[in-house]
Amino acid sequence: MNRLEEIDIHEPIEMDLDPIRPSEIDPEPATRTVRRPREVVFALMPAFNVASFGACLGPLRKANCISGRALYRWQVASLDGRPVRASSGVRVHADVAIDAVENPDLVLVCSGDDVENHVHESCLRWLRRLAKRDVVLGGIDTGACLLAKSGVLRGYRCTTQWDHRDALIEDHPEVVVTTGVCVFDRDRITCAGGDAPGDLMMNFIAREHGRQLAASIAEQLVHDRIRGTRDVQRRPLVQHIGTGQPRLVDAVQLMEANLEEPLPVEQIAELVGLSRRQLERLFRRHLRCVPSRYYLRVRLAKAHHLLRQTSHSVMSIALSAGFVSASHFSKAYKDLFGYPPREERRPEHVHSDAGCV
Image (tube, rainbow, N blue to C red; front, side, top):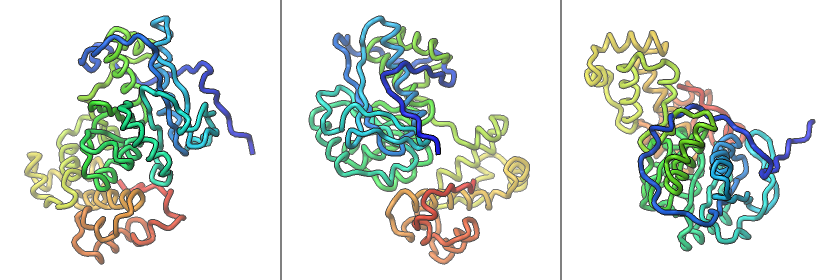
């Protein structure tokens, strides 16, 4: 077996992110002149997403290079000060253990798809202490899930990777979870995964050092638009079928917005301006199934995520996915996944992909 690659985070890192347009940067101007370097800490959790971490780091490095001075300094923290293994298997060296971090201005918690299996009480206590010191706290990818778990997002707006949104909403009703690419709410900043951390940091830099620097960073990173707080995460359906079927997209979005109390297919068709027969033709042509079947899969997908990512009872999850009968839920779940929902939390199923929609 080959040794895992080890990354020294202070070595030069080149990265290219998806295109964004500098002229459309989040319009909020820089709020103050920052004179001393800002101390940024990346708190890497086990199985974090290395691509999201890199997307977040790149704009900070470019800010220093373009400005010709150290606007930002950063260090990597882990739970125990040892290297952290990403979900890809790559290990990243840590500069310090989280408890040894001194006087940070911004702490960014980076985690990945397996966040629910890497909740450490020592990290939650650390985040609470930082919140009491008025440190700006951020969540990268699924990092908002850990911030919420620690209690530091109570009463805040936030966002997270789209497939963890349902679990975050169910577990933390005290937090306002949006579909945004990135969200700024007072001293909390959060974003989705993938390229979203780059957008988050370019908006952060714009607020501190102005739009022109952020635009220059975007050009260096081959972006043609910096997504801001008004942009939402693209749904997988839109990526799959494109934008040429807006009524189909609207119908699916109605389904996704009404899972606990499912709408009749006739009502969905009426709301998007189609007959039931026309809607069924659209679904068959583009999604290869009838609307009722697709709707069922969307509801079961939500149940699947909640079973994997929360400790809620099977019955409460069934209700949140629109099933009033435990037997109906169990049968539908088994028909799709091959085993009943009560077995979803067994070790052999925890890391499996839903693959149902």
